[in-house]
Image (cartoon, rainbow, N blue to C red; front, side, top):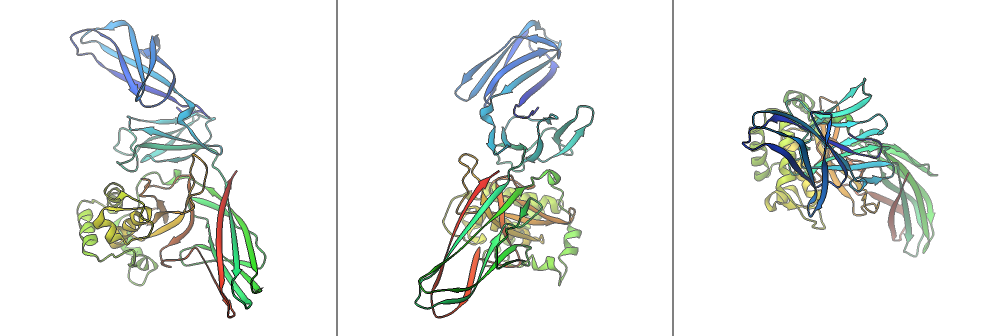
Length: 440
């Protein structure tokens, strides 16, 4: 049960005691930090409960006032108040990761704030009587499970989503002895997507255009930069993450629907093309696609299995360059770019339109922008009639967290630069980019 800042954990247990000796009480250990605990027998009679810190967390001891004998029914409830240290803050947004313990329902009280993101494969129901919003397991599931089996737990975000102001600063340095004329400078800036809203910048002598992947490109024209001089371009873009509450269940579409949207000559067919980093017809990638399809009952299962494979089988190792997906598969290692490229390769090779997302992630510990950037993915969902983002490196299948900021997508326009320029004149023009951010 989640309040504005507090988290109360309730454990309900019922059964028939089959032991020979009387049932006198129980102990419960958790890795979560606990501020307080209480226990109730038959749902209302308070019984003594105490907590002790251990190397791995907290141990709770509960003592029944009256022993439960063999063959008798018992019902008890354990309540734990979590310490605030388990909640990370990003602005006014709360971030909490539930460890791998059985979790059957998450209840957001009326004043908890808006639910923003959950990494549980689940659905949300509104209890009008209690005025709560509850995250409950999806169909045929008894407890909440994370997007990826490798995940350490279930991530939950609630409160007020942050607004990130991304500050772009460029130096256009004329290193030559002649003037640079009619300079056309272009920079990819964060676009509005299903998972983020964007307020575009106001820059003089500029225009905003869209490319084939629905990316936003800010174009600035400069008439002249004299020899040895530097021109400065500065602007900011406000990005507001939107969370994933509308896309929590992995129902992406049917094979027949994918066949329709990727028929010959369609835009969807172009989203199945190979590239330098997506060698779709490599024999190892083709064998993997065949194996995954043979174990899939539908298109959604195929996407989920492909996601699980790259998340579990490709060891995360920073390599400092972008290798192609076939090498990542053979080496069983790579960083976010190789993991994402392999996922896109499997999906494209299997008939699912997919593309790479390039952007940044925010570090919640020090609120710094990941300057080297991050890569994740989008694939098209016919059932939702839209692109769905996922991050196979972080283990998020149905949407991305508040820490993800998309700058550009790579699907039809391949191997893009994040900024580029052209000019006239016999000189050398160097451009330097600096990016920072603020949070509101």
